[in-house]
Amino acid sequence: MTELPSFEGTRILLLEDEPLVSMALEDALLDLGCEVLGPFLHLEDAFAYVHGHSREIDIALLDINIHGERSFGLAELLVQLDIPFFFSTGYDEAGIDWRWRAWPNLGKLFTRPRLAAMIGQQLGRDMAVTGR
Image (tube, rainbow, N blue to C red):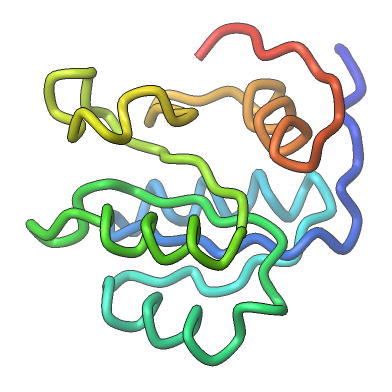
């Protein structure tokens, strides 16, 4: 078993409306040493948190479809605030707005090594991303 890197103290905003997926992501993030901000189940709650606490966020992890609403507006705000983020969605390219298709996507069937690699990339660490 490969030892995963530690991201001790890295604060990650988690936006995910599916409770089981949210719990799995939160557990994986905690195992990697991250501090989970949220998880947020509603888009408006995540927006409010970002508006009030943007300096506390190191990275954001966003599901694209939150109760039928797209999270692209929040993604745009994160870009404006220079907060790195990536998506976690089951959508293929056709389900993602063209402006965001090149953005990193963890996918819903993620592995912990892939999650760790994507966090590392967002933090500017040179890490290979393998598998979904």
